[in-house]
Length: 392
Image 1 (cartoon, helix red, strand yellow):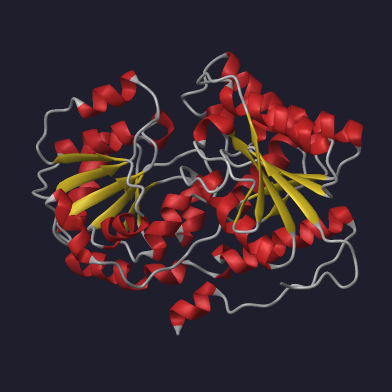
Image 2 (cartoon, one colour):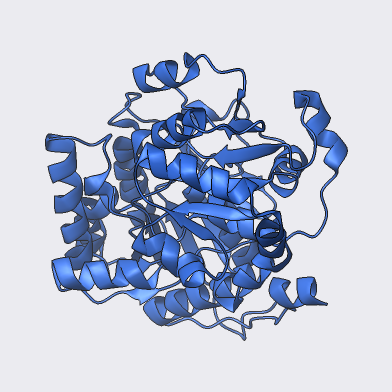
């Protein structure tokens, strides 16, 4: 364990996600990847967990301290009520810095201000534009995002484009720290046989089945195509939903809905053996599913958005699709007639994982923020970057 240069250990509380170890979405993955690396660097990490999600509730896992708190279990209030209770609890502890994820938790910065606890918040994407938040929900997220820029000591965005949006909309300065990725060179192709799939015999979509990820657009566009390949849709939602039911009712034998794929090796095999990964996410910054696609060496067909252009370096590592079903169908057809181009994208996609997306470097940057806010320093052991390991 690294020493802390004679000073008290730096203590960081993380809240706003589902908990640890729990990998369901981007924030949960970040808590895992960042929390474990901070702990390895000698930081005392406490993660706040949704008690309803954990049948077993150990006080510590992998050196990370865990606090389990309840929430009002409804679709709209679960995360906010859990974050509120977590913030109150954290303010009564001896943690040096409170790190919050999700701009919806913006108003809770008032609590930490009262207790004079240093804070940082990762505000993620344009929540107020997501189709699932309409009317009051949309207005709340825009209000909460604005408050986040006023009440937290450090605002963090995960892309240059999102930094620009926050400057333009809220006149707020923020620091860009991208989301990390774990590049992988190998995946067992035999693992896809359980779904009766074979290498390059399918297109792949990965993500929550929600309107802002445009699963309906991508699926309907694929159905309009003449492709003989399958379309594999990995993901779901953890509740009954008419939108999802409608997607699953589409009568086309080429469609395969796997639900959640929680085995990391199975998911890696699905990515790495796809003909192309199709990305429809629209309102976020750095997207974890896209980073996985780059890391697993996928050819990528992505919705044409400023965020996707930033990640794919303006087309160097993927093709872009206009937002309509005909464009999706045409892109699929064009990709199938351009085998050499798709193979070239698969060969070079990992080059898109620059140091900006390396978890070790991402952790270094977060640690710099936490040290600055707390006034405490820790000795940081340098590691070989994941990008360098893959290149070697």
